[in-house]
Amino acid sequence: MSRSKIAGIGYYVPERVVTNQELSGIMDTSDEWIQERTGIRERRYGKKHEETTSTMGAAAARIACERAGIDPSEIDFIVFATLSPDYYFPGCGVLLQRELGITKSEAGALDIRNQCSGFLYGLSIADQFVKTGMYKNVLVVGSEMHSMGLDFSDRGRNVTVIFGDGAGAVIVQPSDNPEKGILTTKLHSDGTYAEKLAFINPGAHGGYHLTKMGEEFDYGYPPADTYGEIFITEKMFRDGQYYPNMEGQFVFKLAIQKFPEVIHEALKETGLQTSDISLLVPHQANLRISQMVQRSLGLRDDQVWNNIQKYGNTTAASVPIALCEAWEAGKVKEGDLVCLAAFGSGFTWGSALIRW
Ligand code: UT7
Image 1 (cartoon, rainbow, N blue to C red):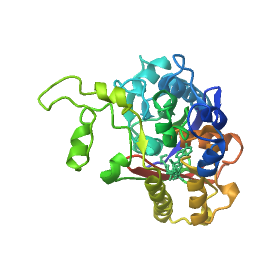
Image 2 (image 1 turned 180 degrees about the horizontal axis):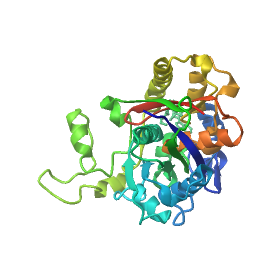
Image 3 (image 1 turned 90 degrees about the vertical axis):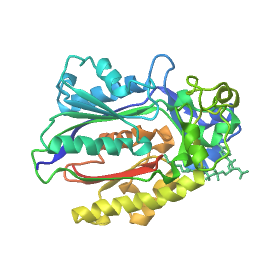
């Protein structure tokens, strides 16, 4: 079986910069708290009614296509990862396809919902399709418009200050050099703690899982034999129960365990060592998480790419944005061993090793 490679990469972030200072004027938070706990100084917010998750994804995709030397019409397959889609359905894959003007092409589109590790899952899917010879140009996009779905009251401050908008994209193609390209991808999940970092409402059956777990909840669901009005109830609106929630410390502790674990797993499979890694591009969840992972792997500062300071956590977009920035800065050179890793809601986590 041949290998696949990242042939082109691009990213897009909205123009509007939102500083910690600006957020502290809206809710009970401070620049000091946000920087100390997360490393974030600012993030970007898209232009309401002008930009969406799929249009930002398309902007990143156009750059990736250009750098891969292909026209968007040559894309065989699209994998779109997001937790903040334009619509409940259909997914962003087909919207991006329309945005790129390639609706008459033969391309298929797949949407995946793997949150922070969405891009790694997408990359792995693309890798399998290309390695087996099924497709030649697979577009993988991670894009998020978080700003549309955050709680800007004090109640949501632990989540809201962390997230930002943006998009990243790659084109995966067959590699002509068997030594180069994606060496391996490792994917994992465990739904035991699904609700520890979740956006429960609107959903069709949120109450079912919570009742089964013996949790007290009151989202104002209508009686069991009533149909309709299941997605959003009046009570959800009244009580603001339609926002993401996170038990931050619980997630933090698991993240610092799973990141190194899944990186070591990829290294072991490929017979490589941490000392072989040229650059680690971790999902940008929290600067303190990245620093702890760096220490546990024994990597120097210049071997880890962090940009959470500028963009916050952009979930599915964070790995491709960071990888693209690193590449543009000349930090990813031919022959380098690049390690990507992510952990997030689900929980889902994964890694990839790429010989550039
Ligand atoms: O990308 C997906 C995966 N996500 C992650 O990996 C995130 C992992 N978790 C984290 O990054 C951190 O847990 C957070 C950044 C979310 C929170 O930091 P923390 O150090 O764990 O803070 P905490 O949740 O334990 O809260 C400490 C205090 C609390 O006040 P009290 O109870 O000590 O009085 C919070 O109410 O900080 C308070 N707090 C805030 N204060 C000012 C929470 N959010 C804020 C805020 N501004 N925005």
